[in-house]
Image (cartoon, rainbow, N blue to C red; front, side):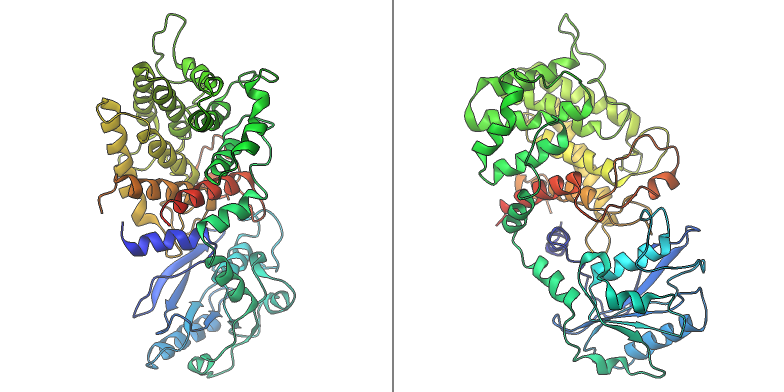
Length: 476
């Protein structure tokens, strides 16, 4: 993994959409239209990092003369020599010519897709100026005058003047949005993790993985006493953590693993062992796999990790054997020939968080399996294969998509955080030598592409971002 790749991951975590430097205009996708058509943009980078960013938009009512005007403006800008600004241009922002309304209403990106794509993309790019070609702006200019796209910050917007020299905009003042994105980028991983800890990991009313991940991150921040207090009802017998066993609950027990290591309190180890024992019959024989997997790739994390952790805590080899057996079982169901994971056998879609779960599970499991156990070789080979498959799919802003190998699918935070954690852990351990809504069983690629994109607070995204941030803290 190159230094540039690592910097892109950090920028993603801190909320910055930062592009790779290029000499000629690069074409990339910003999203997908209702018909599935890609919505493409071109980027012409500035010669200085501190240069302002200008976004130029055309085709808000479909491919028309404004699209030609945008392409001509980009060509003229490229031919102008020294670039004093960063130009991002979308010639056809609305390929299907559907009605647009801003700010967009409905579920992103299931409803009013084109409007959501443009609105959120503007927010993450945080330009200092938005220019719209032509008279028909579909209400965008009025909306930008009143609202902050993606809740990032305000940005000036106006119409592109006929024959306007874009190079003359090099002295633009920084927009509110640009200043906010730079503020987020400047945060250290610890600062980000502490900010997230103000909102996440504050309760453990359900012993599920979502809360557990946030609590593990809080432990990394040194909040031991608070985490022990939240976990205590599940430890002292007041509440039964396996009263309603399922995969989410099994994975939720990873917090007890971390507490056992920090306190040497055997009560925590007993809880972890109790979950791992679900993989054995009454005679102590291994089952075919850990239960409650539902054939989901999520179980590469939710079933494999806790079994391996039980082995590490107790020293009993049978738990390592169970972790390896479960991993092998799951890979037979969901591992694709290209190294990515389908979410479940009903469709071949490589869902982003589904691959994030696999990445997280492999990274956490590798940290537990002894190197002399055959399962370690399996997990290491699997980890390296998945990282090799995922790295080329990172988009130019440093994120992975909601369907990782589908251009135009929206970038998604929780999957990015899990993959980023796995990469960071692998770099630190030497294994590498160089927010989507909850998703049940989908039966088509389109259903995965249309999973709701949550813009505000979300426990999954927050918890995974905390975990990623605390892993990056170890590299500071």
